[in-house]
Image (cartoon, rainbow, N blue to C red; front, side, top):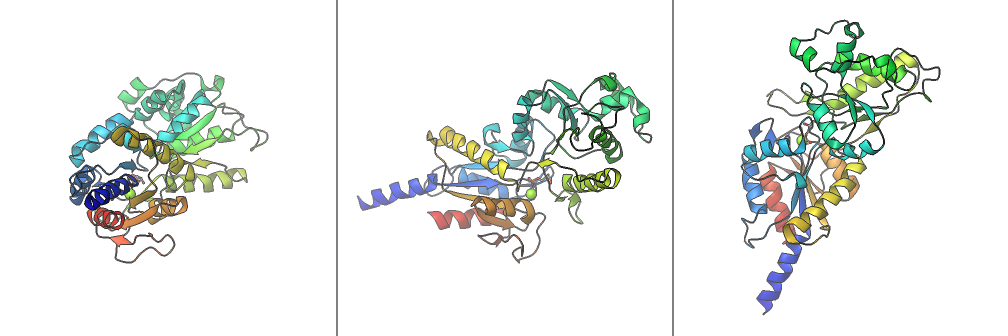
Length: 344
Ligand code: G3P
Ligand code: MG
């Protein structure tokens, strides 16, 4: 009887813990699997002594693909199913903005993919920089449009359109053109091309960035690459130099709090899905490779944090500014094993 009671308790503990996984640098490098990730997920999927599923979600600053498409791609790389219901990428919570803005400029990403994402989120009138270049190519003097871009663009007279907000969804593929168009719009009267605001602040349209990471680990072996955060820093400096005022902006993604409150919602819904209980596990473990985003955000939100050495962070030492509360681990499998042992 005592053994039965003990087993019951352990099952309860297993349901009271959960993992939030960063993706790039923890589970994959670009399209390449980090080998230990598969076993870590298998353990959580029930390949453990209790045969119980331990809940987990994915919390990534990645972007640029619709959630179902990204989950399908990830499932294939990881060899483990990834459900959109357990998946949050940087721009996922930005779908809520569709309630407030009708006509938006969406910046970043491959080709016209971010237009599709914004439309799927419910934005009614989505403009991308290519539409504006196709309207008047002289806006970006060094830009050369390819034939397929000209074909897919939706030009119109942008001096007759009020763009209500700028949403940077993903990494810019052409800093020069995107900076120019964003600058023109942020200096304009309420987002109308061809105008200049009399007051740079009160007539300025809002700008949102989907995440703030400075660096991102990729397949490039000699160090992480610059990310959306550096794109933003460059823009802020130029904006200040040209207008004399600071740019006000909103940033989503890790380590911003809004992303974690959104994650809580996703996690309790996911509990419902796998354990038919809509409760929020008390002990959440964030496993990340970037102290400035994953670990910083997790610590501030009261989660336990594990820093792995397979991505941005290298070396055995914990980060000085944003130390992971559980310490530094070789890889995600070591982190998962440690945390499970701690709880059960
Ligand atoms: O910084 C860009 C992004 O690819 C990082 O993704 O999964 O490490 O949050 P992740
Ligand atoms: Mg990462």
